[in-house]
Image (cartoon, rainbow, N blue to C red; front, side, top):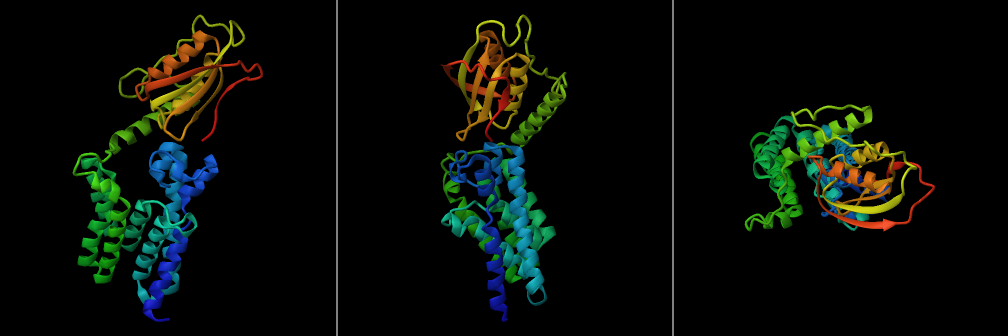
Length: 337
């Protein structure tokens, strides 16, 4: 097979592997809906899945996106590494990004390809790929613009590839950069006007870590401070009878604000059970949290007050509706995704 045909085959191998859009598969498995209805962006990427569904699901998407690039590049290297050398890896990685961004089975409407691009540059050149990712990460920290960071990574790699890896590797890097610009074009156009959405990544990571710590404390019944000197919110269960005492009521509450990705559901479950309440809580696609809770009115009010007192939860608005009591309900649980 001639070198041009080998390059095309490597691209095709990558494209077919890239069509395994992990975010779409995970979203459908968890919610029964397509990723296009997920969150505000509809993007089948790790960040959107993690924010809308959960950290575990987001990490699963990331692992899948990295794995498909590794599989494509490993197969390309095995078949054509003797002839093409490391270019077989570069072409397969580019193909995987094309497959992720433009999957034929999703009518060519896929993700942005940040994870596949980062995986590709690292597999093509571990040293320069990691340098590029570090520069991109620092850019995001400085600007709070994910779009700029997404473009900077392949752009820096392209410059380094032309200098240290050769002309063809540099051209492939330039194609990855153009793809990233294309996928983030809508966001990039909003930067001069100041309308581009900013994301405080460091603050987000800090919140995720705090939520994880709080969840662990809830699971193991830990108490005390949050670790930074501030007191954990306390739950007042005094002067309340058992679950069956007093007049029961059932309320449907929709919480709006910063209520997902902060341990809201598991804190609600733990507090509701301590207060003798039953019902359920779940995340919604629009970023809100829905709850149906049943028990004494005072206990329900204490549950809401407890959640609102948590420093990591920011409830901006609540929609409340009264419902008929469900006499068969026995516990409070987390539902949905």
